[in-house]
Image 1 (tube, rainbow, N blue to C red):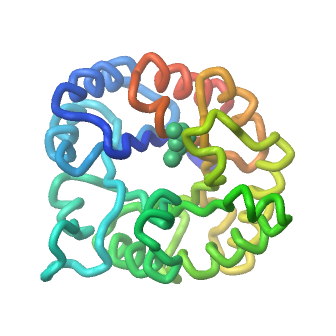
Image 2: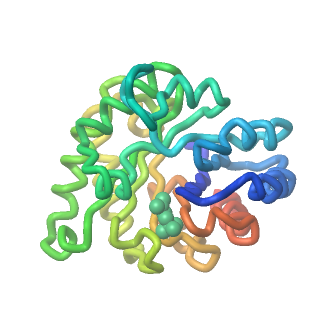
Length: 248
Ligand code: PGA
């Protein structure tokens, strides 16, 4: 049985003023029947961990370097995330693949490093609109899966998020049939490679809102969501969590 996961990606949003809202979210979900993960900016990690200490909510990073330490100005290692109290890290988000030319090989190296220190890796894959229109979606996702996921991945330490680039922050979402097709493909691809693929969690991400959550969570093989914009406010994220709980 795969435990559902509602993950929030704050991206480059949030100062210490946002910690109050995080505490409010924790209090509102003190006994959740799904896993809840918030990935705030790195500056807030340690304080976010403290803010939710009395609650089952988990805190994660948004990226890490593949090396554990060294001369990498501006970067943060998996060990540093762990030290700050994070239990997970998002890797290979399309915004990083696009803005920093992050390749799937680089994502795999980061994921290997994160898993080695005991972090759960949320590895993102997704096609661009051009790739979808050219009917290359499954080829692109297949290549990203093959190269981004390290062999050390298990159902315990690895979660895959399908995030079509064109759905992120746009208000556009794929049809349920399109999500089901890609999630089915991801499950089949993982099954060919990992013995415990049936237990690996697959999230959908891209413009998940309170208004479309029920439809998305009703799709087979969708084990939760990676939520950007709507995770910034408890007024939006809380109903998404409740909808996921209701979808059990
Ligand atoms: P969004 O972002 O929910 O704002 O579309 C999702 C993501 O980038 O993880």
